[in-house]
Image (cartoon, rainbow, N blue to C red; front, side, top):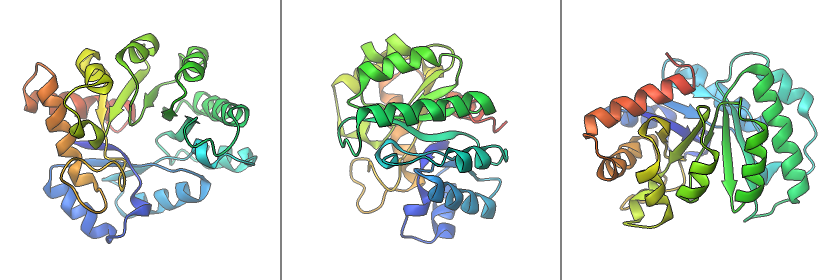
Length: 248
């Protein structure tokens, strides 16, 4: 299993212990996702300690784009070829840490960088379906994953193409029905990935910090919803994730 979205730099437990626990749970790789330039460098440093097990991304989260203008440094970091994706980037109209206009402008500039460096984008989208849909139409050629997907099947099916994927967190273990559960049922298995978004989005029954080891609980839930055996589903998700982040 690959945890396609984790923030290891936020975890309280020692990285060594987190990695050992993840390996015992069957995790084979972790994507360590940045929320700004500083955390991107932290993520890369952690990846350097476990190069066969952790990969890092670089990007500025929509809740952190207020006043951000250092695209020169962002581009320089991405040009090194050391990062496997641009992210976490996107739109967040729930927290509204800055205006829609500033979020959209920064989001598009980072998608431009993803296009330039031929990197996939990890996208955060919260209460922004209309603007997100319009922007994704402009960047159909950019490989992207809508992480912690929480919208409807209708929205997902309206934006899906060969370059668009959807990732699910422990949030799905809390629900028996609803729009996200329906989306999982309708989406092609080959366009699905799993993540913990640790230390957030705890699966049901997990106390304290969420960790990559818990990604198996998300796999279990999806296995309940899709007409495929768990072991086969696990293989499909692993292959999809490795291809997406070019880990093969």
